Image (tube, rainbow, N blue to C red; front, side):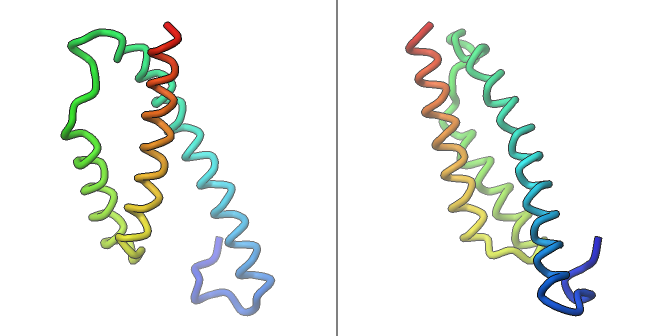
Length: 97
């Protein structure tokens, strides 16, 4: 693993991007496993979606992005898409059950 400023050429940059992409997919797959589990609990009225949760997640992601040097707007856009997919998935599962 090299830091970006340690890369000496495009080949090294590309190799590191590929490594990060693999790690991102693995982490998103882990996150998705929790989304897949969450809909089971949301069948119960007391565990149903809470309106403040999405804002809380977005606020935390934006703060982490800013701290990590990532544009918060980009992080928010990505997470809104991720959350949207999760909500759609849960709604479909809840409708089918």
